[in-house]
Structures are given as structure tokens and as C-alpha cells.
Length: 362
Figure 1 (tube, rainbow, N blue to C red):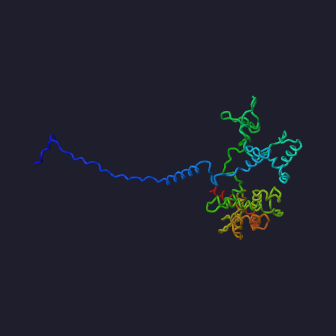
Figure 2 (cartoon, rainbow, N blue to C red):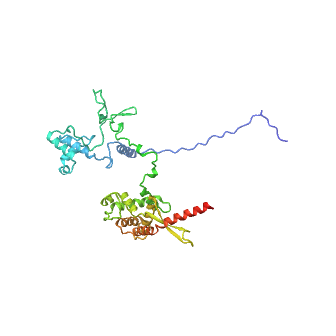
Figure 3 (cartoon, rainbow, N blue to C red):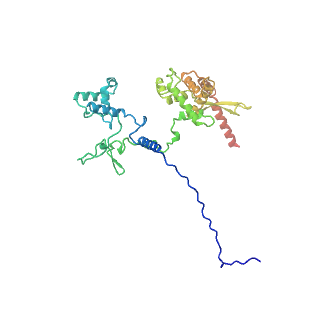
């Protein structure tokens, strides 16, 4: 049986005091060590103060500040550092630069020398090497209730006062472009010339349009830097032949439109009997003509020996302009076949009419 607990009897509790840890005694600092510490503190405070600066901490003044200090010591008029040195003063010191200066500055210097004053004359323009303006110029003139001068600007809320240009409107220095002539049908996808766009799409391989545009840029640059083509009667252009390299887009358009065929040969079956086909000339639209010419030029450019693709196409275009390309022979061959087969047009039309009448009779 478990013993009974008695809460009335007193119990003794053992008290254990906290053990005392002996502390370390710090030896007194000798006198010579205290003197060394005081000297080191003085050196540190000297380095931290502004009295001591190293070799990289004290920089030399600017040349304009040095020139102003020298002029002040010598008694001359120092230049205005805030506004910069006027160009006229620099040109007066340098005669070689004065000979190559613009006529406006030469006239201003002559006017100053004739008047014997350093202030610019009325009607002349003050040129300065500094783009900063003093803040006092932007403040209204004292004792004047009129509008601010034309060369200053002030802000009244969100409006700018002092920049009224009659041709541009309030607050605009240049007029806003007129977008009305563009119309609603203008799209940014049609921002290039149609010939340039069509040639660029023909140069594109594997859907890489950016590379085709880069090649088109190199081709136009080659046409621009090339010499003028010789006189070629087959090259049709409204511009003079000698001025074609100055306009590479017009040069490219003239080359493609000149070598483009007017018609194509379509082989139609069933008109001659026995499964033989009849060649029939068919006229082409402008875009179809240009597409055929571009395909001929690209096919001829594949056989050239230049390393880059853009160089091969550019050389082939220049050979077309000079009349030495094989595209001219292809064009002459197609036109010759069309002339010999032009009688088949009537036969083909009669065959269609007879066939339609027979179907109606049935």
C-alpha cells in the first residue's frame, strides 16, 4: 500500500549558493605604452582632419579657373567661368583659326574691332563655348510689366510663356507635321518602296526577313557607290542615266522594269489534238513582270563567283544595267516566241467558243 502524504509536516530544503568565479586582474599599463597610444591617436586625428591630404586627394584646379586666377593676379579682365569664353575672344588670339572661321564670326570680329568695344553690336549674334545660361536671364526684368523677352521662358502652371513661335504655335518651336495627306489607307507595313519590298521578299530564305533586309541594304549601297552605267537604249528611266547612282531605289526600279518581260508563254492542251499543247502568249501585270525579272536576276547571280550573296546580286544588277546579263537574252527569247505564237490566240478563243456552243446545244 502506498504511503500517505502529509502536508502539515515541515520539510527541509537544501540551499546551494552560486559558485564564485575568480576574476582576472588587469596589470597596470606602463607609462611608455600610454605615451605611444597618445601619439598614435594624434596621428589618426591628423589624418582624419582636413588639414592633411594625400597626393590623390588634392586635385589641381580646372584650366579655366587657373586662367581666371592668373588674369586676376596680372590685373587683366578674367573670363566669365559661368558663361564660358566667347568664341570671338578665342579667335582674336588665334589668327590661324580666325581664317577658317565662319563668315558670321569674321564679320562680328571686324565690327568689334571697328567700334573698339567688346560688346556685340546690334543685329549680331553672341556665340559662346558654354551651353549653360545664367538663372537671372530666366527671371522677369525689374520695372517692366510687359511680356518677357523673346529669348527667355517662364512657367505659369503647366504653360510655357515666352516661346511663342508664329509658324509653329504656342509652346512649339517647330510646326507639327500635317498627317492629313497620308489618309486612312496608309499602313506602316507599306512604308517601303514596292520594288524594294518585292525584291526583299524574293531575297528572303527560310523566313529570315531581317537577313534579307540587311542584304537589300548592302545591294542598295553597292548601287549608290557604283559608277554611272554606260548609255544603254534598253534601260528605261525618266531620270538621266548619269544621275541614277544618286537615287539607288530609282536605279533598282529602272533595272527591273527594263528587263521585265511583257508577256509569258502558256502551254494549253487539247487544242491541237493527240495530247499536244499549244503555246499561247498571255500578258502580265506589273507585279508579275517584276517578279519574273527578279527571278531571272537571282538565277543568274547564283553562277557568279563573289563570296557574299548580296555582292553577287549587286554585280548582276549592274551587269543588267550595262546590257551584259543573260536576263536580256531570256527576255528576247520570250518575246520572240510570243510573236511567233500570236496566231494561236485566235485559235484558242475559237476553240473555247465552239466548246461552249456545243455544250449549250446539248
